[in-house]
Image (cartoon, rainbow, N blue to C red; front, side, top):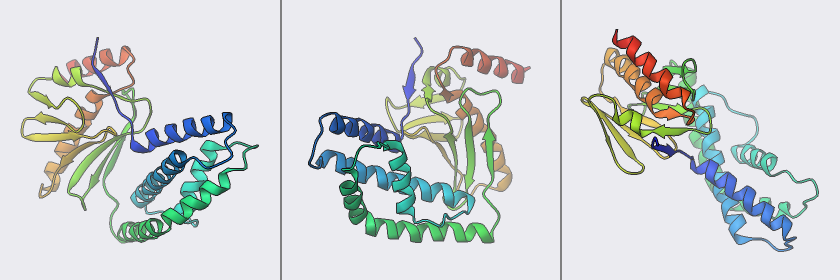
Length: 241
């Protein structure tokens, strides 16, 4: 059996935990607040705010609503229960707890967006054809890095396929993983992001290693369906001819 390592972002994990805890609280008809559910809601809202700042920062867009209100709105849509009135006490607690972090994230968002409106957008590639899991590759000059990010769930890492590649060395039993390809070291996070440091690389070399990152991401990302392996092998053979 092929070794497929699941990838789950902290945001996805917390969302599932909150949904499960909310369902339990509703079924049990709890009248008081659940401290565990409240803690998970605070953590989920913080993760949601960071995600919003990251996404909007990439495209140079800022929503008229605050980051905190956007995050709460997204979570409320996930948890929507028409006959449940006890949520107001949780939202009030979350707002009070995250008021200061939210203001700091608003400042960070402004700093991320301003340079994008003045300078050229980061180079990016969206890869959808010929892959089972679409992904995006971005060049982030401010971090001196290239990063590949899966755009669909479920997504797994096909480690056996990576290990089978000639001159590839996969290190680590769990995250973060490292994949050594010649002189390049690709670091894989628990969210499935594949990171390659390219600080001080000339632009021509960045474009070359971006193509290598595409190959690594395509080799790793799979939804677990058997036909995906055959497709990658066929493409590798074609490129070798």
